[in-house]
Length: 231
Image 1 (spheres, rainbow, N blue to C red):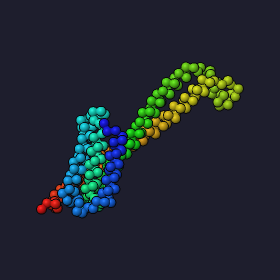
Image 2: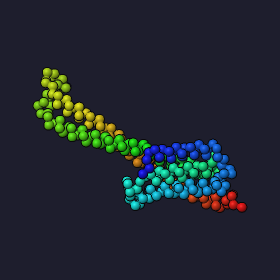
Image 3: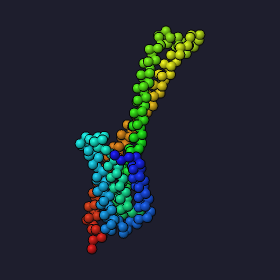
Image 4: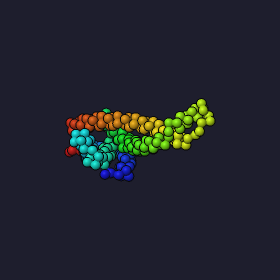
């Protein structure tokens, strides 16, 4: 399983390659050279390997430890890095530009899914566990409060009976109930955010489909017009 530190290093490498490719590597003649094509082919191959994870997840129905996401992050970081180096500082064609932009959107949408969704999902689990504990505590507090005590406490709170005796257990019961209400509101917000990230993953998949369609066209066009490094 790929740990967070390694994933961060891979993403940092991608950003570094983006900067190097944009500033230091000239598109011509590198992209059309033998080395340039080799880098591009290697990058496309690794990106294709990144599809193994969604195939196993969607088709083979393997999730969790049976289908760790580490390989997807690895291939999805190294592959685009090589493609960026292949593209150089200026895409050579409109198709190349579309591939370049699609690639950036896919990687950064993957970053959103990797880090933000993970944090939201963890927060949902933590708040759910906390709410379960509060509900258990509420049931315990309710056993210590009689209907008469609760009635007197509520009358004192509303001011209708200002001299009514205060009930410590009633105050604790109220505080726990308020905590549950706040927790349920927070959990609803996180659930909504999680739903939005789920929709965002659909964008990630659609962009991936577009990318590989454009990549296929790019390869066919390159082969049709000839490989410049051939004698």
